Image 1 (spheres, helix red, strand yellow):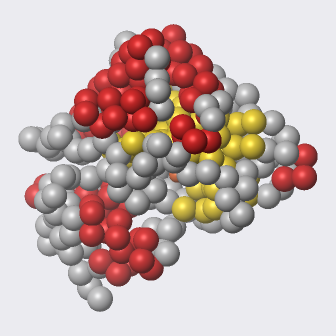
Image 2: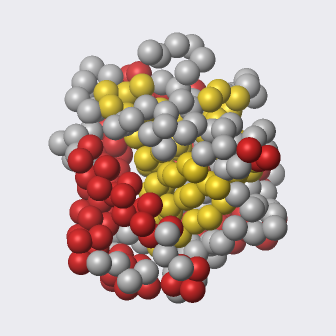
Length: 301
Ligand SMILES: O=C(O)CCC(=O)C(=O)O
Ligand SMILES: [Fe+2]
C-alpha cells in the first residue's frame, strides 16, 4: 500500500492517466516502484536472471577477477577491508552486444546463462525506453530520444552476517546517471531512500516489481526539475541479499543538455554543459558521491 511515507508506485499500464503523478514523483521523490512491466520485462525472466546472478557469484574468485573494469568500477569488486559485506560484478554497456558477450565470456557463462543475460539486457533497454518515452510525454516534449545512451549493468551481493546488523552495505550516494532500474531482493530489505526532508524511508521488498531511481544526470537534463534521490543499503538481518542494477547513464560523447522546452526566462539554465564522462571523473576525483559534485557545475557560480 502506498502511504505518504512509502516509495510511490507507478502502474505502467495506467498511462496517460498516471502521467502527471509520474512527473510529480520524479520531482518530489526521484524514485518509484513500477508495476505491470510484464509485457516488456516478464517476471519469469526476472526469476531466471536471479538464478543466473546467484550462480555467477558462486564462481571461484579467480574467474570473477576476469571481469575487468572497462570504466572505473564497472567490473568485479571483491569484498574489501573498507566494505567487507559487498561484492559486485558488472559491465559497462548492456546495450552493446559486444560488451555483453565479453562479460559472459569472462565469467564462462553457459549458453543458457548467456541467453538469459542477453534477453534480460534487451528487456531492460526496452523498459528504460518505455519509461523515458512516458517521461517525455509527461513533460510535453517532442523529439527526445535516449536510444543510443549506454547503460551500465551491475549485480550486487551483500554478505550480511549477524555481527553486521546495523552497519552499512553501501554508503549514502546518488546514482551518477539519468535513471536506474533495480531488481531488488525479493525477501531481504535494507535499501533506504532519503526524502527531500532528509528522512530515510525503507524500501520494503515487493516481489515481481522493480524500483526506479533518478540520478544526477536526470537532474541536469531536466534543468533542475527532477530529484536525484540519495540512498544507502543497511544490513537489517543476517541473510544474503542480492540486487540487479541497470543504469541508463548519459549521452555518448556529447554534453548533457536539457531539452529547449525546459529552458526559458523563468527557468534559466541551471548547469553548464558537460559530458557524462567528465562528470564521472569529477565525482571520482572529488569523492563527492551524493550529488554534491553537481553544485560545481552550476551556471551561477
Ligand atoms: O542494492 C541495492 O538495493 C542498491 C544498490 C545501489 O544503490 C547501486 O548499485 O547504486
Ligand atoms: Fe545506487
